[in-house]
Image (cartoon, rainbow, N blue to C red; front, side, top):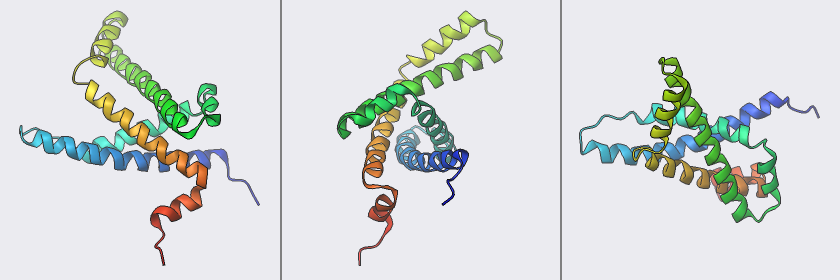
Length: 165
């Protein structure tokens, strides 16, 4: 049997991860939209969820290759879920930091001004609920991912999508 190329496996895995986060984000963002609707604030759920899920899928794939992440493979599943969520969350924070830093530099800020505004953004009170939502999303994802890896992808699929007859 011919082994699938690495890029195909990575793409499949990224799409699966992105789909899981897309569902989680749509649910969280629909809640946010319903809360903001009381204040007549427009908010685009689908676009935000799609972009966010693709970004987080890539963060997971990158940080999944780190040796520190691989060390969690031998832990009890509950610790594996928690520690991987922390590692992925730190990856998300690093990605967010770099994203805002680059935006500031492109806008013409000096390096020190860009770092200052990036740090201010990262610790702002408006960013904290988003961090909590992302960390919860990582916990949910990792719980499902550990189950999938434990019982196998086919059994995982059957568990959710196969009718019981």
